[in-house]
Image (cartoon, rainbow, N blue to C red):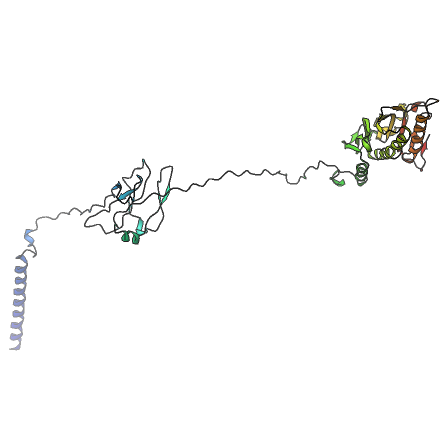
Length: 375
């Protein structure tokens, strides 16, 4: 009995389920939004994608002069904002561009809405410049956020004169600069010894006019390591011709002229000495030019020969044996000859030998003893 009841209940449930399914299918087939019966689907095809048109470039037009005179320059432009149902609201700014620039592809919207970033206009022309871009708040305050006129900013020109480049002397690494002054060059670098420098200081104090010459070396016994060329002595007394000597004989000769010859001439002739004629200074030869004789002191620039003395009044006194009645001339020559032995180690003149009959010979020959030959 129970088995029969449960079987009957199952059949009723199945019948109800089928009835509900049939009712659902009928409802879905009737009406506009229902399902399409399978028998009416003939084919399936891919529909074309829907393309939305992008916003067109802004239209850039020159501003017409207003009654307020806001923008009268021909280089100011305005731009209208693109409109459409799919375009979001945005601020479109206009800026000046140079003549001859293609503006068909110019976009007026700044990237990502950063309106505070600097904008350079006139790119591609000879005069790029920075445009002043107002902020969004300034546009709203002006009441025209979609149309703005901007005046061009004048380019800033900085004029500067070219600065001269100072040319400095260049020195090669490992090389010392050349020193032209021999007195400034140290002795280890080929400069003068201390004795030579001290001698030249004495010449300057005596008022001697001279110049340093390159070293003279004409063979064994004929050389002057540090020669000088003397042109004038103390008081402007000229040496004719200029004498090439070493510094030591020059110093001694200058002292003799200043202390002995010049005062003696003023006492006897009431006139100073104008010039001294020298017959020999440096000369590469033997003593008295004899073959086989020792080298003369002239060969080392250590001797000078005097042949004539000219006074300021024009009188010329030749070094020779004076006449019988030439008292002043005899007195002058004898006096200066005797006093010269205080300055030189060798003094020869008229009466010494035949080789010195017409001149005085002064030198500073070094001897083993302190002997001075004054004949």
